[in-house]
Length: 109
Image 1: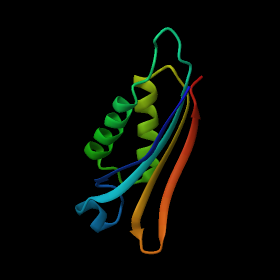
Image 2: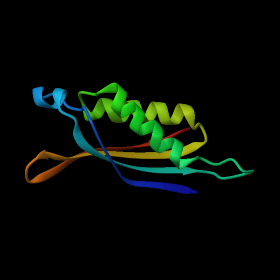
Image 3: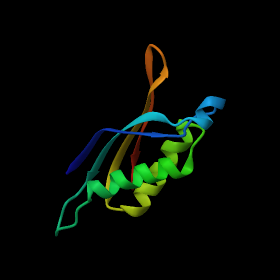
Protein backbone atom coordinates (compact mmCIF):
# COMPACT_ATOMS: atom_id res chain seq x y z
CA UNK A 1 0.00 0.00 0.00
CA UNK A 2 1.07 3.57 -0.57
CA UNK A 3 -0.14 6.60 1.36
CA UNK A 4 0.22 9.94 -0.43
CA UNK A 5 0.13 13.09 1.67
CA UNK A 6 0.17 16.04 -0.69
CA UNK A 7 0.37 19.77 -0.10
CA UNK A 8 0.18 19.68 3.69
CA UNK A 9 0.50 23.41 4.39
CA UNK A 10 0.96 25.41 7.57
CA UNK A 11 3.14 28.22 8.92
CA UNK A 12 6.13 27.65 11.17
CA UNK A 13 9.52 29.08 12.08
CA UNK A 14 12.14 27.60 9.75
CA UNK A 15 15.29 29.09 8.29
CA UNK A 16 18.57 30.73 9.21
CA UNK A 17 17.92 34.31 8.14
CA UNK A 18 17.04 36.81 10.88
CA UNK A 19 13.51 37.44 9.64
CA UNK A 20 12.87 33.68 9.33
CA UNK A 21 13.59 33.24 13.04
CA UNK A 22 10.93 35.83 13.95
CA UNK A 23 8.04 35.47 11.51
CA UNK A 24 6.44 32.13 10.71
CA UNK A 25 6.42 31.29 7.02
CA UNK A 26 4.39 28.90 4.94
CA UNK A 27 5.78 25.43 4.36
CA UNK A 28 4.28 22.69 2.25
CA UNK A 29 5.09 19.06 2.92
CA UNK A 30 4.56 16.04 0.68
CA UNK A 31 5.04 12.48 1.84
CA UNK A 32 4.85 9.07 0.23
CA UNK A 33 4.70 6.12 2.59
CA UNK A 34 4.93 2.53 1.40
CA UNK A 35 4.04 -0.32 3.71
CA UNK A 36 2.59 -3.81 3.65
CA UNK A 37 -1.00 -3.94 4.86
CA UNK A 38 -1.83 -7.21 6.57
CA UNK A 39 -4.01 -8.45 9.41
CA UNK A 40 -5.54 -5.03 9.97
CA UNK A 41 -2.09 -3.50 10.48
CA UNK A 42 -2.35 -0.09 8.88
CA UNK A 43 -0.86 3.38 9.16
CA UNK A 44 -3.23 6.15 10.20
CA UNK A 45 -2.40 9.02 7.85
CA UNK A 46 -4.06 11.54 10.18
CA UNK A 47 -1.54 10.55 12.88
CA UNK A 48 1.35 11.03 10.43
CA UNK A 49 0.04 14.48 9.46
CA UNK A 50 -0.36 15.49 13.10
CA UNK A 51 3.16 14.25 13.92
CA UNK A 52 4.67 16.26 11.06
CA UNK A 53 2.87 19.45 12.05
CA UNK A 54 3.69 19.14 15.75
CA UNK A 55 7.39 18.44 15.13
CA UNK A 56 7.75 21.30 12.65
CA UNK A 57 5.98 23.78 14.94
CA UNK A 58 7.82 22.76 18.12
CA UNK A 59 11.37 22.34 16.81
CA UNK A 60 11.70 25.61 14.83
CA UNK A 61 14.40 24.16 12.58
CA UNK A 62 17.08 26.32 11.01
CA UNK A 63 17.82 24.09 8.02
CA UNK A 64 15.50 22.12 5.77
CA UNK A 65 18.08 19.32 5.91
CA UNK A 66 17.81 19.12 9.69
CA UNK A 67 14.02 19.18 9.55
CA UNK A 68 13.69 16.45 6.95
CA UNK A 69 16.16 14.14 8.70
CA UNK A 70 14.42 14.66 12.04
CA UNK A 71 11.01 13.91 10.51
CA UNK A 72 12.35 10.75 8.90
CA UNK A 73 13.75 9.43 12.18
CA UNK A 74 10.59 10.32 14.11
CA UNK A 75 8.16 8.85 11.57
CA UNK A 76 10.10 5.59 11.16
CA UNK A 77 10.46 5.17 14.93
CA UNK A 78 6.71 5.50 15.49
CA UNK A 79 5.65 3.54 12.41
CA UNK A 80 8.22 0.73 12.05
CA UNK A 81 6.13 -1.09 9.43
CA UNK A 82 6.95 1.61 6.87
CA UNK A 83 9.10 0.09 4.14
CA UNK A 84 9.85 3.21 2.09
CA UNK A 85 9.47 6.87 2.99
CA UNK A 86 9.69 9.94 0.76
CA UNK A 87 9.51 13.44 2.23
CA UNK A 88 9.59 16.83 0.54
CA UNK A 89 9.54 20.18 2.35
CA UNK A 90 8.88 23.31 0.31
CA UNK A 91 9.14 26.99 1.20
CA UNK A 92 6.86 28.53 -1.45
CA UNK A 93 7.25 32.17 -0.42
CA UNK A 94 10.93 32.51 0.52
CA UNK A 95 12.04 33.70 -2.93
CA UNK A 96 9.87 35.99 -5.02
CA UNK A 97 9.96 34.04 -8.28
CA UNK A 98 10.66 30.48 -7.13
CA UNK A 99 9.59 27.76 -4.75
CA UNK A 100 12.46 26.15 -2.84
CA UNK A 101 12.19 22.49 -1.84
CA UNK A 102 14.27 19.72 -0.36
CA UNK A 103 13.41 16.02 -0.63
CA UNK A 104 14.80 12.62 0.22
CA UNK A 105 13.92 8.91 0.08
CA UNK A 106 14.59 6.28 2.73
CA UNK A 107 14.39 2.50 2.83
CA UNK A 108 13.52 1.09 6.23
CA UNK A 109 15.39 -2.21 6.30
